[in-house]
Length: 85
Image (cartoon, rainbow, N blue to C red):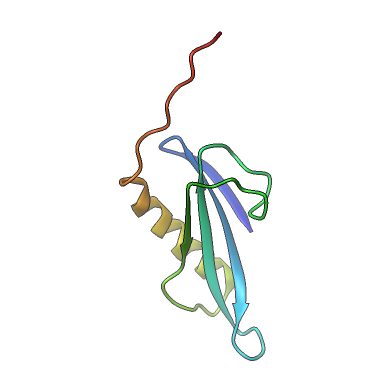
């Protein structure tokens, strides 16, 4: 699991799941959020993404899905600044 950001005002929550018969492959999953989540599982997100291929280790899967999330940011409007009351 990896929480990172802010990236252009957004945060990423990423997770690598085991795939294959004996967990020898990993698939990345990411959520793009406006606020920093504590964990991937409690992230209130705008977008959910899945990696495009299986990897031999979890770090590779996390790196791939994080790069995919960065590419998706250009399609999102920047977060609005809230005025102080």
